[in-house]
Every structure is written in structure tokens, then in C-alpha cells.
Length: 69
Image (cartoon, rainbow, N blue to C red; front, side, top):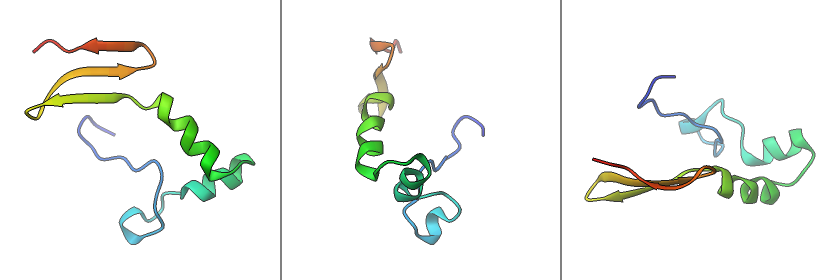
């Protein structure tokens, strides 16, 4: 994977995401339910803040920080 490549982590069961497991598949593999997995993702995924299409800040497990342009 290179910077800028699209990566599908969880598929939706369509041909557009063929080969990627659905959230239900992952829940079954880990012995839980899909709702629990999706709730756990929220705190782990970075939030990117854009202004006029430009990245201005990032919030992730390391905290919130503005990006210098």
C-alpha cells in the first residue's frame, strides 16, 4: 500500500468491496457482535479536519493537533 491508495478494511458485501470481510464476518471471527466492533472503531480512527479542502487539524489517540501549512 502506498500513500494515497484506497484501502478497504471492511466490505459491504457488494462487488465494489469484493474480497473484503463484512463487519458481520469480522464479528463472527472475533466472537462478538457487529455493533460492538463498530463502537470500538470510533475512538481508534483519526478525525481529519478540513478547511476549503485543506487539512488543518488531526484528532487521534495521540490527541488533537493543528497542522501547519
